[in-house]
Image 1 (cartoon, helix red, strand yellow):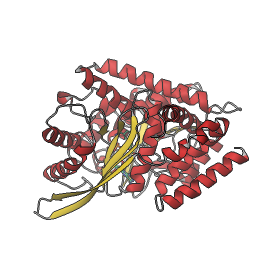
Image 2: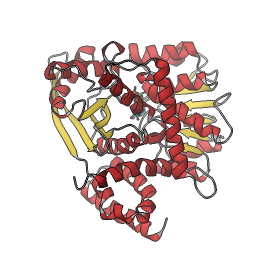
Image 3: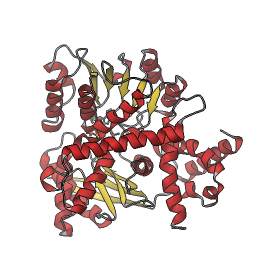
Image 4: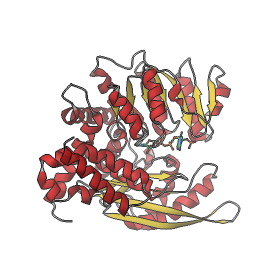
Length: 451
Ligand code: NDP
């Protein structure tokens, strides 16, 4: 980086931190993008003159609201709801809803910021947003989850719409929650439109949307591996998480010939040296989606597997690692352990799972490393395809959706190569994804004037 770019990043971050105190995840996400795009801004001063970066870090709108609901004992509960509408330069706001006890404004802003670049990378016309609540569905009855979702949507419905803002699922928001949210939206607005994605197949959902993030991450990883003449065939894969993204990343990696040896949740991880197979992955889907159990139960059902309470899977020897749980779940020490054990490819299914120190270790070791905003973009891309099908009142076959998902992931990979290939030939996917995602949004903002 030039002296100018370095100084620009530091002075920008000082102001950002002073203006948004305590929002560490948001600071982290902005610094990562800024570090990639600062040299580009220096080369194109009209972007500096237009204060594009200053405008991009200021959400177009932040909605925070009270969500009161009653639990099964008749006790009143109060949660906080959020929708951060970050950037609508290239399309209606689009981004998931997260229900997790850790949700706060910093996490919402970091996710909405990342979403803006990710959505731009998909090549589809979608702006960036994110929403959620500090409500945790864990341990709640279906009736409690429904009452919460109805209360949450009673407020949110004023701010969203098929041409305004189209939410989807994320951590803690799967098919059940999207159903309750959609039902309440439809009732209050008296319209059957594609305002949410991730809907059930019988009521406007797209084939392959549940699979899309995990499958897309594997398609992206396939492209990365191909740059080194490799594939998933015969490789050992370590995956974290056991939710939507992890389940389908594991399924696709297996279909592509890999041996998947771990899954995890927030209580610990399971290591199955024999590898998952079709029957085992179906059991995980049943365990997590139907009976909402814990991953420790996998080791009880399959005694060859070992459960490690309170630990993360990164110490297990592997060729490919796919973090698919949550932000900052893979730190510097764990990155060092992965590299030392021979891992040569890290493809992120989650959003910002690797800490800045971990990313630096991967890049210094010159291993393949892709940030979530590139490799997990298949989820939102397929949400975009769901929106198209809803607008056309049509339904595409699984093969059609899969072909489009494949093409989009391959186009994102090509964009990363174009902007991220360094002088020595190393592909810096962070730089590539950030610059490619940034350019389209930045120029759209310039075109549209000071809004
Ligand atoms: P799910 O709620 O389906 O699953 C999340 C998984 O991660 C669960 O196994 C959960 O365990 C685990 N987890 C959550 N928080 C923590 C934590 N603090 N520490 C350790 N494990 C944790 O969510 P998704 O699979 O949908 O999302 C996973 C990641 O992928 C997130 O980063 C999300 O933003 C990202 N993503 C999701 C997309 C989608 O289409 N769903 C699209 C793009 C990105 P537990 O059961 O114990 O909570």
